[in-house]
Amino acid sequence: MLKWWIALTLSLGMLSVALSITAVSIAIPSIMVSLAASLDKIQWVLTGPMITKTVLMPSVGWLGGRIGDRRLFILSTSVFTAGSLLCSLAWDANSLVLFRIVQAVGSGPMVAVAMSIMFEAFPKRERGLAMGLLMTGWSIGPFFGPLLGGYLVQYVHWRAIFYVNIPAGVLSIVAASFLLPRTRGKGGGPFDFPGFLTLTGGTVLLLLALSLGHEQGWGGRLIVSLFSLSALLLFFFVVLELGSEAPYVELRHFRNLDFALSNFIVFFRVAGFRGANFMISLFLQKGLNYTPLQAGIFLLPGAVMTGVCSPLVGMLSDRVGPRIPMIGGFVILVVTLYGFSQISLWSSAATILFLVGLKSVGQSSLNAPLNAVALSSLPEGKARMGSGIVGMTRGLGEAFGITVLSLFLERTTFFNLTVLNPAQVSRLSGSGRSDVLSKIQEMLIQAGEYGLALPNKALSLLSHSLLNEAATQAYHHLFLLIGVMYGILMITVLLLRLEKSQGAA
Image (cartoon, rainbow, N blue to C red; front, top):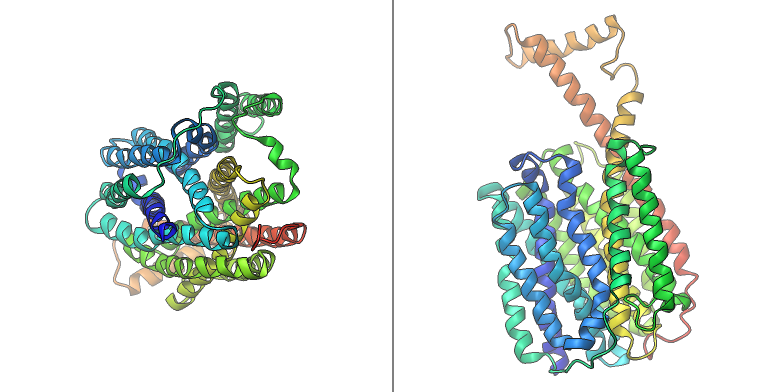
């Protein structure tokens, strides 16, 4: 009976984090306008916390050994909840990024230690179910987050979105104080500061170079220096960790093929997942002109499907093994991403809702089996470090996906503007451009427009239409790119050895 109470407690903590992630994603366009922030800067509201969370997740191995899993969960959840309150007080983009990082200082260890506690609270034959239940708690956030976030952004203010996850965080802290096992820290070696610093420095510099590269020029001295310094720090990180008796990240676990391949799949699956969600939110509001509330409503079916499917897939993985649900999940995702690549302004709401729900079915078929494969491939007692590494991989994938796809979106949009056919482009020959503008003016006159400003209105409408067309094509190309990536990952699943039966491992 205790395992179910533990599952509920941990799910509340996961809910508080998930509420923040989904509500912030839906509010990004409004925050950009309110704080006068560009896409390059506003992406750090998402990417900055992801980097912080990523480099802190492996710390659960050392922190859990020092203070115990229960205390670590309570402490990290408290820091995250306090950070949420601070975010509501942000006065510009920089302060919002800073307070989001405070949130991540708590959420990084919290998510990783929750996975470890959950994995060890359930018997071996039910660990697929355990991972599925944890993802159910995670999915409730996307259910309420977009709806509450969209409503608050549209009718109250974007600052109000940071209040919605506080009640779940407080409940989780109270429940953890009474229900989680009171384990004591077992001590351990000193904290691996060299490993922590080199990992943090290398990761931050890498993401900074990716973010600034298209502004500064990929061959510019600053970008080349950032990439070089990042590579150097990450090289030293690997050397230090392999030579340490108590490393910050136990890289020796990657000698296990299943663990290594699981992390490889997790990285690119999450990169595609977060990148696609980021683009879908922008596409609905910028491309299809939906309000924040409407966009939030469109994301609801996905959250419902995740909550329903995750524990079912976990049980299926316990019975038939993880390979079948994972392959099925990738097949669904490839089909779904192709569907997104065909969406236009004229697509029906039912079509978009169906694709969002189907996408979540595919993702739900991957989460629990992948986590179970990764942790089950390690020796008993290593789940805490294993969950930290998987969490770090997931965080790197999130940051990589949003950063790189934001870059690709801007570059592809610009490229599309230069290759649109001559009947569409503003760089028309004199007569061709005049013909197009004349037709637009005729349409405006028929709509009741008149006056000396009519030519300028026609030119503005032409420019807006061209940019919208170029951006829509960019979204379509990137959805196809993510679909191709998922197809490659599906083949990678076949390389998993799965020597241990996941139902008995």
